[in-house]
View 1 (tube, one colour):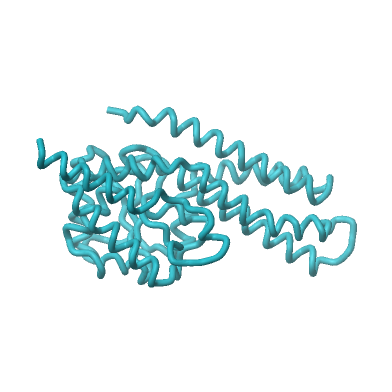
View 2 (cartoon, helix red, strand yellow; view 1 turned 90 degrees about the vertical axis):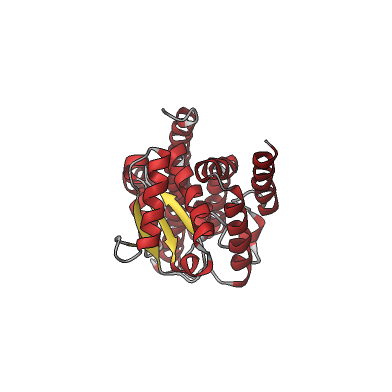
Length: 290
């Protein structure tokens, strides 16, 4: 049975791709009329790539490697069981070489679903807590909201990369007519990271609450996820996010930059952790009270 939020997420995807096109063409207009056509063509190509290849882009950004059943038998067994419960195809499993414990799901639909976890999460959580985290990620796949969040991450990364490239070109590229206006390039370098964060913030925080609830009902153990979230939030405050990037922070179950200061910390891509834990423990109480 299709989730009632599928159509809503499809509309979000179309709007997000439209925003991407507008931002890129706007960047071209800032740099000069000769750049508008180039950026319009790039927007078309990036729209196509973001839809079909954003999951691969995000996995590569985090140096994630596919894991087989012999390499991570416990992880594989839990994912397989939860996928069967959720009535979705078995997602591919990836490992991220980072000590910070975290996880995310990606893919354009359940048939192309991916669950990626860091090496740190396998070391920090016990089996019950790990199962709680994986139910959350399976919940994202079942709710079909992974395409929207993955495109947002890929788009934000592309915008930041283009800004850095143009800034470098403006400084070292010479002074011919085809070189971007250095003032416009500098403005772009300042605006781009903020635009990338706003793209992330355009993804409703409700998707995290919904995945928490979906996962807790799948596992019938909301307390396990609540405990795992508390551990992951603490770890994010004391351990640097070695592979994570601000443009992909919204993908993770816990914001990997929770413990950082500066501009990134001003834009929260996740709902308050205390509220997430409170809701999950409310589900536990309601289950026992029933």
